[in-house]
Length: 508
Image (cartoon, rainbow, N blue to C red):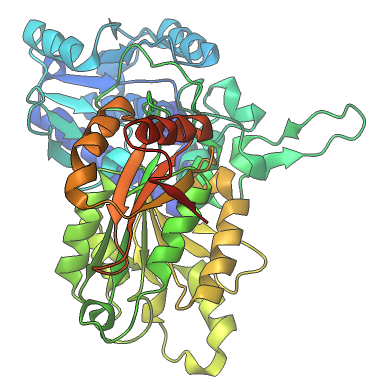
């Protein structure tokens, strides 16, 4: 079998180890389930392409050369599930169907809602296990093992993940060593392919072409840092809603559609000194203002104690409810610096040494970094992306949609924020219309304005209308906040009509 032969003849010992481990998982699954009870989820991406050829090799080794191969390619017996979406790149669809024709894949095409389609397929066929090309850095990989039952609420089947521990480098080492065909988009600078509405070529592979004034890109396998694999993923407000959403994606991520055009964030401060009132938190309010300046809505700010479980619980709550979570405090070498451990626990991964980050720390703290391993360089495994910037001594840490800030004061936060904004295309942030606000002052009592303000809130649901007094005897301040200044003016005018002229005055 050509795949097994290519690996055996390779000098890449790491690839051989990864290959052997993956083949073991495949053969184990084939021993546990009959051929009618297994299926393979294929999406045309690089990860599922690797898995497909591993399955060919695994089936060959499981059954033996004589009974498996008759000198033709068209003998792949494992049923293949393909989710066909109008949001997919045409090149992905073409590659998938070309592969099916070349290798004789028995495609079960799902064009409906994926969950419903999968339920129907599993009712019609005795499938008990599905091979997936999930890798540890994928959003869907958190909490999974090589054999993991499907999630609650989904049809019951065993998820089999032979390449769960493979890296970006491992995937391309396999493809190039075995010389297997892959989707042409990867030769155009795409490194992680999702929807046509959320995927662009990776800017790290861009090559300036002064002659034609057009951008050109190096192929995906030349990306130096595999942790930047998803740098070509970007949320776009103008994208339509895809017709279906894959539930067991293995390399092609679903479109995250913001129908309301609203991006949300939460802010978490870690520190007993803030929680107990020993130190005044200056970073939270500043971060709130900075997020509003790029049009993001802050849904919640929280302060948690220096405790791994407390951090993990809060991060777990906020990461699924917001587009981005910003967390600061509790980062360093002290016993109370538990933020990274808490984030790792929230995602169900372990802390693991990061050689690149450790080099930054060694350069920064020099002889103060003792021992073979700097514990400060332990980062959440498989979900960490380092956001580099020449003005920062160490990169910012991003774990999926959680950004860990190292700032301890306003000056440092200003610098980190500036660098983060410049890294928008790699950080997942999107700059939108900023919020604007106006304040009115009045000597009316709370009772006098309560009912008119309640009606005003119903009339202008797109605005945030808040009331407060700086002192018990001071004037009532009414604050209007939103993204449309004309709407704010309309609300102010509408409120003024409910009272005598001069009742309200604008506060600078």
